[in-house]
Amino acid sequence: MSMLNNTSSTFITTGSIRSTFRSWQVWLGRRINNYIAKLIAQREQQANLVILRSLSDRELMDMGINRNQIGGGLAEAAKERSALQEFRQRQSMMS
Image (cartoon, rainbow, N blue to C red; front, side, top):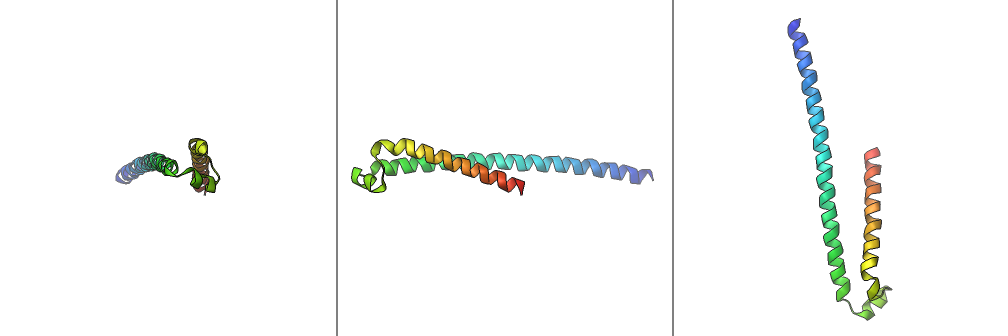
């Protein structure tokens, strides 16, 4: 009987350690993914700025923007995109 009791308490302890370790893995994985996603978004924004700044005034007018709207417009679009990604992430965590 004592051997059975020792085995079950060890099993419970091992299971709780595994569970805790797994939750830390998931948390760390999400943190790393979010960090990489932010880096990619920053690089994308920089690339878009370079492309827009290389366009002529005529090409910009065809798109409906002025040269002085380039920086602020991209920043606002990035904020909206970030908010949408956070919303989707919260939805996926709830389901």
